[in-house]
Image (cartoon, rainbow, N blue to C red):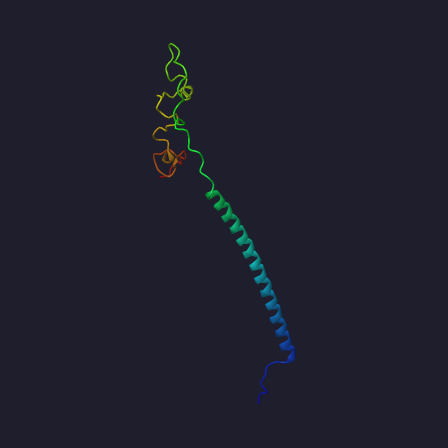
Length: 131
């Protein structure tokens, strides 16, 4: 009949030692995870505080109502000169009136004109023999 119990005392001692080593390793891993979690929490809190401060700033001042139009002339135009010759856009060769903003975009030079994956939009890439 069997006396029950298991292996020898040396086997038990070795198993207990391995168990203690594994438990110590597990505690170290948990401490490292806790440290990393605290670092991430601190960084997250810092980002939150920065975003909160940005959201609570006062709004920037509104642009001047004449910011999009050329400034009015102070004196009458000289003889023989067009009234828009002194406007900022005149130096660029763009004809304007006093009510036309100088940065109006012309049609056809948007995001789609730069696409290379749509035929006919001239994305700049041309591979012979490809569809």
